[in-house]
Amino acid sequence: MTKNAFVCQMCGSCCTGEGGIVVSRSDRERLSRLLDIPLAVFEQRYTRRKSQTFYLTTREDGSCVFFSPESGCRVHSGKPDICLAWPFFYGNLRDEVSWKMAQDYCPGIDPKVSHEDFMRQGLDYLQAHGLFHRNGGDGANSLQIEDLLDSGTEEENCPRNTRNDTKE
Ligand code: SF4
Ligand code: SF4
Image 1 (cartoon, rainbow, N blue to C red):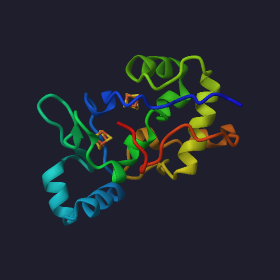
Image 2 (spheres, rainbow, N blue to C red):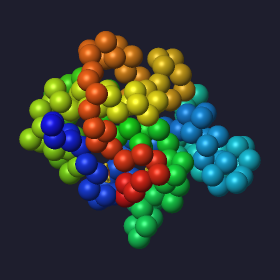
Image 3 (cartoon, protein in one colour):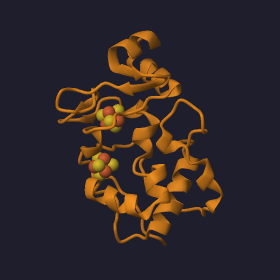
C-alpha cells in the first residue's frame, strides 16, 4: 500500500503567516452558522475584503483570528475549505518545486513519498471531500484545479483528517 503523502503534525504553522485565508461564500455561511451569528455580522467581525475576495482577519502577530496556541483552530468543525485542503493546493500538486518548498513549511508532507503519489492522493482527497472550486468562483485560486482533474487518479486511503477530526 502506498504511504500517505501527508499526515498533519499539528504544528500550527499554517495558521500563521502571510497570504491570508480566503473564505468563499459557502465558507462564510458555514462559519456564521457555526458561530450562531448573522452572515453580515460574521463578515464585519471576522473578515476583510479586497475587491470581491474575503479573507479571515489576522492578529498583529499574523495568526488567524480563530487560532488558539493552546487549543488550535477554534472553528475546527467548520473551518474554511482552504484550511481543510492544505497542502493539496494547485501549485503543490502541479509543480514539484513548490511541493518541495512546501515541505520546509509543513512538516506533515512526507518527502519520501514521490510527488506523483502526492499529486494522486491530493486529487483524490480534494474530489472526495468536494474541496476543489470551479474556475471563476469566489473561492481560493489554489483550489481551482480543474485542469489537473484529467491527470488520472486512483482510489487511495485518504491521507487527511476530515473537518471533524483534529488538525491543529
Ligand atoms: S498542515 Fe502542516 S503546517 Fe499545518 S498544522 Fe499540519 S503539519 Fe503543521
Ligand atoms: S485552520 Fe482554523 S485557525 Fe487555522 S487558519 Fe484555518 S480557520 Fe484559522
